Length: 206
Image 1: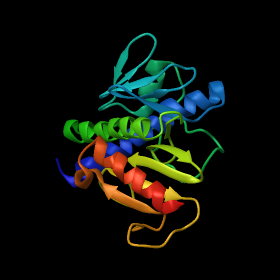
Image 2: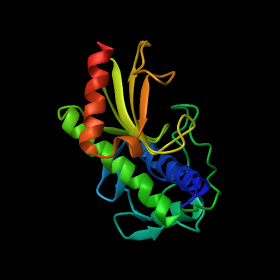
Image 3: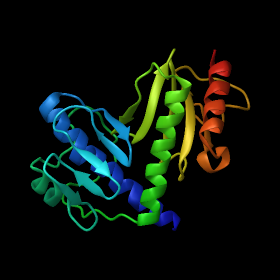
């Protein structure tokens, strides 16, 4: 798997989250947030849509994503491929007419990152709802004005990473990013290490 394959796959997964799940959900239910589920991610309200590996799962069947335009996938699913209008700016910039390209290995990396984020956040703060945000495509929570989350990679770090982002900036060696602190998942290794990173961030943020 190349860095280019990871970036391309991540971009099209991000586009799937925005155009095929969050957008249709917003137009139907007024909500943009998604959730991480076994094998991928899903809407939290109607329409009931879920990404499972490389497929979009609807109430009536499964639709392969790779090699199809978002508009074609949406038509098969009975929804409109469009972002949640006027809710946020700065999403992935993926057009509905683009053809989805997914590398199998890169897809597994991205979905494992989201699953690790879900399990780590659940253990770290079990009473706080985890949200997969379509704008940034990360699974995250906010506790006492501090954001905690896991991203499959983005413009800040081009690989999956965990982060702690206080609403007010902090100084010190722990805080290595403009938005707070981040550590690649390859460096942290497992759920327990991600939890320890979150716990360290919580102590230093207050």
